[in-house]
Length: 96
Image (cartoon, rainbow, N blue to C red; front, side):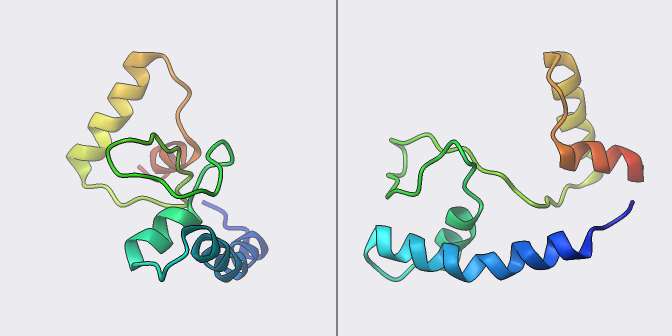
C-alpha cells in the first residue's frame, strides 16, 4: 500500500486548530476522547456541542484497528448490504 506522506503531515498539522475550534464551541477543556471524536467529525456533521444519547454524529476515521474476526464480519456486512466499502476497509482487503 502506498502512503502519501504529504497528506498525512497536512492532516496531523490540522489537528491543533480543530481541537482549538472544538474547545471554543464546547466552552470547556476537552477530554482525550472528545479531542479524538471532534477532530474526526465528518464534513456532514457540523462543529457543535453534541449530547450523548440524543444526537447522531457522522465520523471520518483516518484509521481503525480490527481483529481478524471483527474485520471479516464488517466486510461481510458491507457486502451483504450492497454498500460501497469505505476506503479504510478497501485498504484492509488490499493488505489481506
